[in-house]
Length: 391
Ligand code: SAH
Image (cartoon, rainbow, N blue to C red):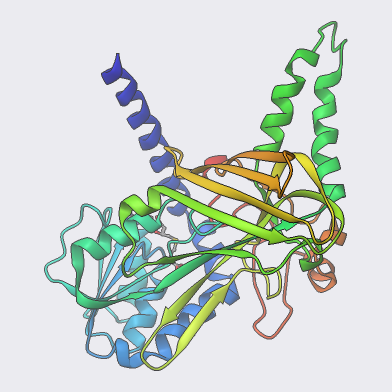
């Protein structure tokens, strides 16, 4: 019985993974990432401005996709780049390598980085393994597994660290939108059937979806956000399986707290430049957007009150995380809870323009978000750092 149960779990995880690689095998989705100009140009700058870390070095690119980061490393002077890719896009990366005359430097290896053979240890590992909320897709684990298998002692991880940010937010319109969907289950005569016994479950299911999309910094009701930093040079696989974040917020605005507003950044600690790629609400948009995790019941909070609690994130076999959030009003027994399945994203890009900054809303209509210094060629719908489950 137990054996059978284990097998079932394994096949669920395998199915999730084959969906994941089928998604990334398509050029449509590689293009989507390449056209996120904030993302791609920050990676380019981080590598080029630290050419000293690449010149004459051996580099491993974990999940090379179209090969773009491998090309940057080669342009920065790398002697050899092993470009590992598990999906069928590997053959297209190989085409680009050959046609662009990089065949002597970049070696495309098709397979999982956990399984491929590489003939030597490497000086630098580059990768873009981030999903929304940093950890969705669980690809950080492959990045870390690559480090443990192939990085020379003292070698460089690029990016070097990542940080999750979370702050309490209020958004009555968003909450009302979710609850309006639940009303469907309140019907007592849907083609003669009383649906209302499922209402409670419908509330749970709707609120379990992380809301992926931009939000205005104005919705946050306490600062600074709580942070959880992951050092890619040292983090262990076990530490990525369960993540606990304790928080304490001093509320700045009397409001209904609807949940936690979240984003992440990664940092490239090179020898000559430190670069940061942020997906926060104060900077240019990216294809990761931001995300919000909703409480099952809003928590009424007064300015100056303190909310404490815990976020518990446990890796699951859908290449994502089950998240539980506890929120407690200090010195009272009043609290609220969130139970989130991070893989069940609800995309919320354009439905409520007042919830994100005006400059985003304006250009978002035509799907071309070119604003701010760096610009952004993000996609119009569908893939916030991996929408492969929705296929
Ligand atoms: N580096 C590219 C692609 C990033 S998307 C870019 O920056 O544009 C992540 C890529 O990693 C996908 O193409 C995915 O198929 C690949 N990938 C994910 N997990 C992997 C693993 N364990 N081994 C090899 N490739 C992996």
